[in-house]
Image (cartoon, rainbow, N blue to C red; front, top):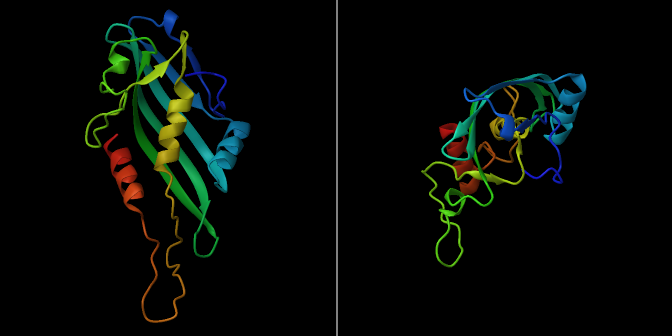
Amino acid sequence: MKFNETRSPVSFPVNIARLPQKGMAVVVDADAAQRAALAEAHDLVSVERYKADLLVTKWKRNGVKVSGRVQARITQACIVTLDPVEATIDEDIEGVYLPEDSKLARQGFNAAGEILLDADGPDSPETFTGDTIDAGALAEEFFGLAIDPYPRKTGAAVASSGDDDIEPIESEFQKKLRLISKKL
């Protein structure tokens, strides 16, 4: 990960050059300022709790694997009434990082330089430069994917002109993204 990008409110840089053989445990327990920044970044009313328990280990020859779990308690605005809706997030995390110059990192490309993706297959490894990755930013990505895009308070209904109830329509892209994130 390049650090000239926008930094995550729960950023936790890990120096992979000093990674122990058994791996390194990383715990990100967000304080009040970090939770407020997460709420703002993800358009939430509030984040009451955020904790990521991760293990960063060496992977293959020169890669790094981050695995673990992110748990959070959040409050969103109902899409119908704008009343607060509480939700709990509990997601498994797994990500693989490879150096930018690694041969394994280039395996997903064909001869024309196009990226080949398999929607049902595992995610492609992320690449990084230097000797640092941001384990906290990966946990935030999984947190963001777990947030309900259409929170609705129990019993809230959209007023309609007829007898038909209007439901938010999920695009094909949103369905695939939701299914992929559940597999992770």
